[in-house]
Length: 600
Image (cartoon, rainbow, N blue to C red; front, side, top):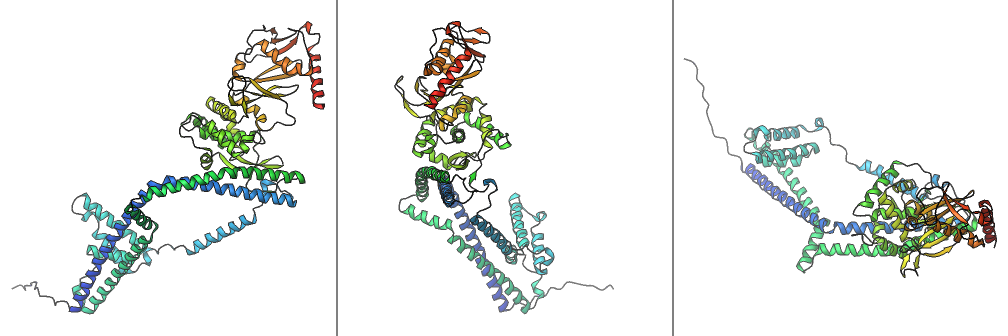
């Protein structure tokens, strides 16, 4: 008869009271951890939601405040640098090459401090967690049990259960990456994966030791969660939320009030920036006076930009600026392009035109320039957030330094010139140029206008003038002694943008160029051209010719007195026999008269 076998079930010995007490204590601590974790997550979500609402309500206002503060810091830095350069000029320190200027001691100290801070950060930075081989075996075992328990193939239920397992697995992976025993223990306890094996095979001493270790891990997790909650409660977001709750109980709105306060502070800073622009121009003039006394150049400075100059190659940055100006001139915010053109004209003028040296006047001109543009900012706001190509800064000008509105880099001037090929940019540049003209009263049309500067004639001698942009009446004529500056130096820019038209005509070997407003050029006749030549070149020197003795030739053919002067034609002034002088003699007489006037 074959032997038989059977499975006999026998009852296990009940756990000792000490083990039961330890298990109950562990269960209580786990419950506390679960509740604390939920409370921390809830508080974090609430603070995150409040932070989002705070940012939505105040972000724009605080960004506005930061821009105003940045403008103020920039102006103060420039003023400090001009004061330093003036002191060096007064002390007679020789100037070094500005482009190879050594760093200032303060800058060197800051650089060393930054390098030291980076070294300290590297030393203090947490080291990478040890590789898997360095982890204790019991931690590896715990992680593997969790991975098996959370495997997707074991998921029961729908997509929600699979997503829950995926989230828990992500937490387990992150805890394993950090070698975070407490986090793994907590996950194991919540999922029932914390037992290393059948506890029934352990004696009471081993079971008590195991339960004590797990309880310690849970208590550590509880302490960590308490610290996290305390940190959240001390955070800026919690403080602001408490303030908002108190203001709400008092009938106020803390978020709206904070935004309003930031806007008011930004407005005050912008208002203070305009007088500092005047101070900047004054400081540059004081430096210029000190340099004139010594006959030297300004000392080297990292804040002084190289002069733009002419003939620079078109760089990629300049090409991008030309494209951007064409887009902005036709876009909804043309004031961006207008400010760039204003900065370019300030440099082209050599010494900036008078309106650019007085902040209050510049603000008024900017307001007039922006009339009709919806949403256009005032001057201080525009300077606080200028286009990328524009800055308030310092630049070389001869032996001295110019201060104020300028292009951010010297190569960008070529980009502005290239942009003038676009019709929209030309029209906008003409509008900006008109806003820079001197304020004059026109007797012809009775209006107060910003006059357009004209070089009424150039060639044998130059006669400048101011014209009314409304009716084209000449308001004043005058001579400029020495190189033209300010608006007078912007004649080429005025012609390039079409604000002023220019008609050249030859008289013997001399070229005379007459500037006028485009409307005048469109109706210019041969008679009107002869009249201009007589009024500006002959009459001032007492040269009188008989009526009809001077006429206009287009090529070889004479133009009738009432005929329109054709565009692009090669014109020549010719003397009829009744003039009694040749063209060459006429040029000699005009030059002699010009010499007498300048000697006088």
